[in-house]
Length: 268
Length: 209
Image (cartoon, rainbow over all chains, first blue to last red; front, side, top):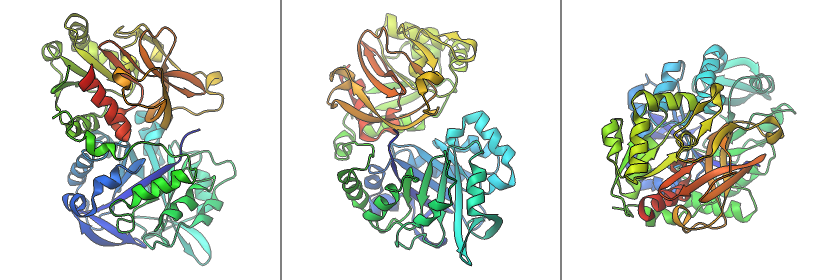
């Protein structure tokens, strides 16, 4: 049995990291500011994976984003998934060469599935994370792309079923309605998964307190939970949350967070 | 022998930033090196890598890096740590893509997980998984009976015939997760992606061997 995972998501816009609420962004600070004021390394040593998304609302500067992905490698010793605006195999290669282990794609899935296939042939399906942004409209779950601005015609259940036959490693299912609200995950989204769903699923959007992470993880359909909420899990918040989850019996990977300090510069 | 300088072998295969970052975190000087002469004269080597066994060996052979590694490790007793594909390339033979010989630093061979062995488990094997240690010295100093490490692979090295300290993981079938035979070490998992468990193992490699 593979272990369940707790993932942290960093949202990036034009050189800064952001807080998001219902996909509306608020600037938090640059990477060094994040390290200093949010003790990001404490967060980084308490997670199973890091996702970093370029959600720039204006034109994206890919080189600058890649530079940030590479810098995150310095303080983060877990797999990193990076994405936002990924449309070509070249972009994927560049992200992987800059320290990403996986790439996150969204619009590309519906717009050009052939490129998704090429990525999987070149780098393996395990390195593709399919992001699905969901909003409830008139009582129906609908799928949105382009940072939540364009509604797709397809309904969530149909899209999740279609995705099962894509060459992808996992699905990142994010609720736009719950995003940044801290009200807890939109667990009902999981009911839209096909009965025979085989692709691992990451549930995102809404976690505000440790018990929310547990509510997601205890659902058998969620293989991982993600939060992008810097304020609610600031400092040792995620570390404490992880300990609580392990105490409650969730099968998460174990390591000694305290060792991080004693190993830093130990050989210098 | 405590290490202050590490040569990370650059042969164009795979992502090396996280390995470099982990070494930097531990406070050692690390350099990416592709020159066979410099590899040959190094006292501490790390061989990273992801991808196919055959392509990996071809990349090592095309620049005579294979000979440089063997000279450093066998004649000069340099210590070496192979990571993921890097560990597999240290074996005797890999059956991927019609097969090719490895560096032969250990006698073990590398094969794909068979469908019978997997018994429903999917490949690639991806994620944190428990690793069991045969003993807790050398490369495995300060670990408990089992520890979690991050894996991404579809091929694995067989345990049979491993003559040294080793650690195993079970994914449908038992396979070699890590080993230490004197100055020769390998990990199928990624220590640079395994939080403090991985940093601790890297420290042991650099400080104790």
